[in-house]
Image 1 (cartoon, rainbow, N blue to C red):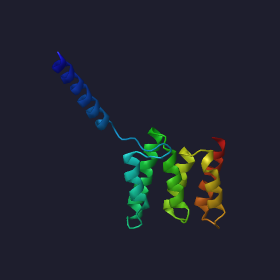
Image 2 (cartoon, helix red, strand yellow; image 1 turned 90 degrees about the vertical axis):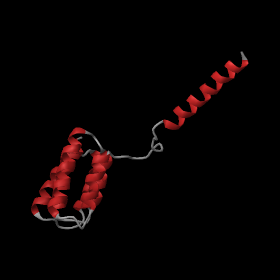
Image 3 (cartoon, one colour; image 1 turned 180 degrees about the horizontal axis):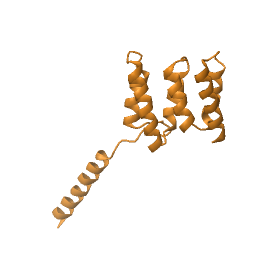
Image 4 (cartoon, helix red, strand yellow; image 1 turned 30 degrees about the vertical axis):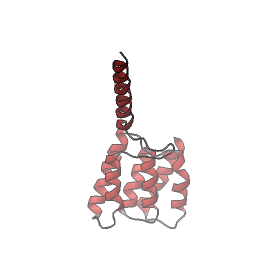
Length: 136
């Protein structure tokens, strides 16, 4: 009888250990994560060696991803990429921020606007993005 008891006890311990070590890893609490698809697109966008066409395609694809999933961390990363630019990349990023951003991005948008004189179309979409984000 005791052998059966110890066999069951050992089985329970083994199963518990297997379940414990097979559980999915969770990021530490407070860690901001983005989906694999968004991360892949962000790598293309941040790659200065990629062509403008590929980077613009990646931004537009990311815009579609954000339409499906809300990923606020992605917008913060995009604003960091746009912070020192005044070109088509910045324009597309601002369009994405206008469509998906919220009020937490308003300070970054204002600091971007205060960085100097921007070309007309970027200035227009920046003003629209600020207005849209303040409304949310």
